[in-house]
Amino acid sequence: MKKPKNIYIGCSGFSYKDWKGTFYPSHIPEGEMIIYYEKYFEVVEINYTYYTMPHPFTFHSFLEKTKRLKFAVKVNQIFTHEMNYTKEDVKKFIDGIKPLLEEEKRFIALLFQFPESFRYTPENIEYIKKLSRDFAGVDRVIEVRHRSFANHDFYNFVEEAGFSALVNIDAPKVKGLLVGPWVSVGTINYIRLHGRNKEKWHNHREPYQRYDYLYSSEEIEKIRDKILKIYEKKDTYVFFNNYNWRLIEPERNVRQIINNP
Image 1 (tube, rainbow, N blue to C red):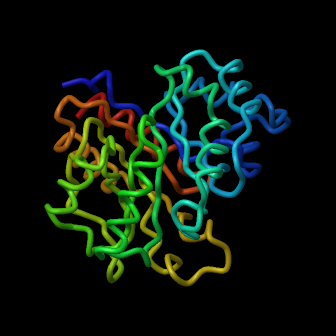
Image 2: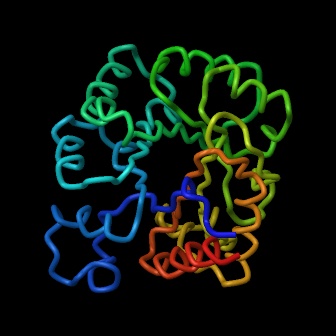
C-alpha cells in the first residue's frame, strides 16, 4: 500500500537559523527559506503568531512565494494561555491572516494549543465554547495536553463545538500528559510530534529544549502504524514540532515508511 495522497507531512515553523547549513543552504536569505522549504514539504504550521499578532502582508508574501504549500496557523497566546482576549483581538487576528483565508484551498486550520495546566473542568469547557463561537466560520483544531481530557464526552464536545479535529500528539510519557490513545475526532486528522525528551519536558531553561529529540527508526515505524490506524480516508496532517534541524531526516523516514509500509 502506498501513502494515501491526502496524508501531508510538514514542520511546526520553518524559519530557524540553526537549519542553515544543515537543511537550508548556509547563506540562504531569510525571505527565501519558505521557497526552499516547499521543495521538501507539503504543509507548514506557522507559529510566530503565538507570540505576536499576524499582519496580512506576511501571509500575502507567503502565498506569493509558494505555489502549493498549505498553512495551519497557531493562534496567539492571549487566546489559549492568558485567556483574557477581547472581541477586538479576535478581529485583529482574523484580519491578520485574511489573505490566507481568501485562499481557501491552502488554509488548513487555526491551531488552539492549550497548556498542560489547562484541565478538563466545567469552567474550561465553557471557555472553549466561547472561543469556538468567537472564531465561528474559520476552520480550527484544538490541542489539549492534560490527561483529564481523555474521555468520550470531550471527544463528542469537540465535534459539537465545531472544531475540525482534536489534535493527537506524540510526546514523552510523563505524569498527567495526554499522549494517547490517538483518536480520529472531527473532519480531518491533525497530528503533532513533539519528540520524547522526558528529561527536558519540565526541566528546561528554554522552552525549545523540551522539543530537542531525534526519533529512532523503530519509533517512526510505530508512529506510522498509529497514523494509518486513525486515517479513515480523512485529510491527515502530520507536523514535527521538535525545533532541532535533526528532525528533517526522521521526516524523510516517515515519508518513506508511509510510502512503503
